[in-house]
Image 1 (cartoon, rainbow, N blue to C red):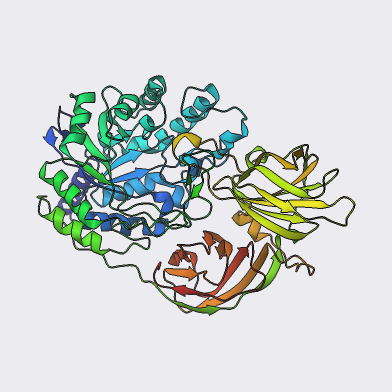
Image 2 (cartoon, rainbow, N blue to C red; image 1 turned 90 degrees about the vertical axis):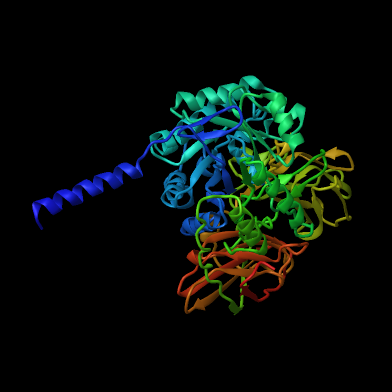
Length: 602
């Protein structure tokens, strides 16, 4: 190779490197977003790295680009990255938020960062870490010094990950959101300003925005001076006039335009009208309004990450495992009819070339898998804690899973048993015999205990946490039994408490130990299956009642025969060529049933 050719290659490489690290200035005019001084209409599709197997991040981002988006909005879930106090994970698998943002840049997409600390998102506790709930009188989303100390640590660590990826440093991040829909919750402007100061102190110098409903009181309580105003959602001139009335000197945009909606257990699948969506997006495009589709792709609430809603003290609406959301890109990453409608619509208004739609990820069917009993929860009880009265899971460092509460009945031994409060699903046993279930929703928290011939009957209450509330005024939502248990009004004392976290490490240490005859509740079933090739699949759990599924040690999430979800998504990356293992825990199933794999959610 000649010296001249070598020099040319070095120069070209230098130019490419310089271009790849080109720095940009993102700013506001009175009505517009500006990129390097020129108007930029943000057409964003939201997706959440924690809900998408990291092997599919690039494919999902390419799908958003092929629908016409130029930006990706991404929530960062604090509790996903700091599962224990001071123990951060921003590096492995789905936790590598910086890698997700780098892939966005490589695919030519801008990024709007939504880092919380609170995010809502139908995610457990709205992204806040549940170890905060170990503090009995903790106050959240305000200037409580204990909360703010934890927030400060989180922002400091996250900022170090994303700072090199700001557009001013050659990355794709244009804006950072301050909190989320704060005007729906509270009115502490000092708190919002403190968050902005923390981001600035840690070198996050791109512009900020807030996101609130398009109503005067929400915008008044949730916005801060100098931050762009996001509207959840902005659908009309009247909505944007509300934003201008709040602050006429910053641009407003639709920070959450909803192409789909969430689904709770016991509901029908949410399938919003596509005609209304087309009308809203047409309005935004015609008026050159920036917008973010929440969500363009939902993904999955793997494990125990699904949240819940509650709008009264006795209401409880847990979210299903799937976060398909009836989004344009479905749970498995495939384009829907809604996707193609939006792609055609957006293409009429944008000047840039929209790429071809990527090939879908392959889905496979799996023939019927035979399962056999493995053990029961009663054979897996650890050493108990002793407590005068029941204590929530979080006080023992447990997030969700199960907790068994056991005591002897002295004095009253039959009658009305009341649990205050059962969070969230409880099975009641007397001397090992199943009596009844109690479900939190609706406030009917009592059962009748029959008379027993045993001198001091043993009462067992097995409680499942089904997701911490993630929105509105009942966010302080501890799991297990949160206060007391009474029998005919008498408070029951002296409890043994057995933590059963049902985490992947907990499942990995299960040993075969079949229960004695008598109590068939709380059974584990196990099976093996063999694959010649891997692919995405949906495990059909319609033969079971209520429980959790683990594939090769991965927690797929919850199933419940109340519906609507009967199938659980499993990505190809969690399957192996050759031998695979499935473990099912079911609260009520006495006999093993077969399981198979389908190619679709329903």
